[in-house]
Image (cartoon, rainbow, N blue to C red):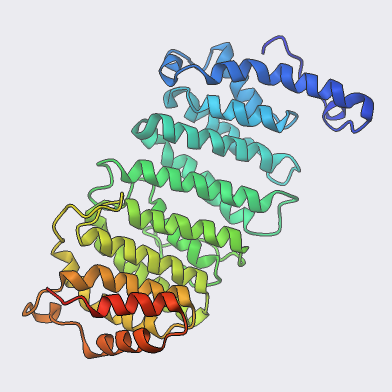
Length: 377
């Protein structure tokens, strides 16, 4: 790779027929060495340091604007195999240098995000110390990408930022570092804030007393992506944080978004609450139910039942189904004679009967009928 000359703007953007064969040959020459590196095990990169030619070339191919996109992506994937103590600091510096207003800036930043994702997959907990600083850059880029300021590639950059945040969350929440509360980077709180602000809704105050800036509504694909991050929080969060997350989803998000009429936000919140309730009921992230129900589920049951009643009256079929699925989680764990934990209320029973008999959606009628046959234990 060290013997290959840097590409020029003229070479990359030459559309003449005579240059097509030359460009393909040039692409193969630059791609071939890295395809060989891809078959080398991650463990073999342990001795690579920031002064090695290999690392310098990989970083240059990932961060260079004048480079084939295919080469840039493969370089980023291999860069994710280099130990975080070497790669993270340099990646952070390069990410800070990227001019997102430049036509090629978004593509370069996306490649660096890809490297971050591979670092998360390959090294897990070893990148924890670097996540807060890099997450700051990703969140600020996500906010910028949600506006119309970028010349091109804004929507794809949004999704790349979202994927990276989800990977970071998985690393942070799969370890012991978040067991006492917020993760070190606070991504879960800040994603909720950004998710709200992207709807034009009020931001929740951060722990520092400041709010993220309100940004315009973003496209459906970005909304769906951010919803996936929200549900990832609920799926991966340590059990001690679930009570706080339930308050976040059921309070600031569900109540406000109902008034705003944003179905995609409410669906994300409902899915998140379902994930939390499922885990409190003894379920695990792989879908199995092996543990005993948490006592905290008893605390939340009355509010969850009220939520199910509200969801039964929603116009969107997906939301009505979400309410029934949530009820399916809490109904088998109801214990009679436990104070406020008590029986399913009359309103809830009535909404189930109505749904089973007259809901326009067959899926809703079928699930409501099944739930009516379940007796609280």
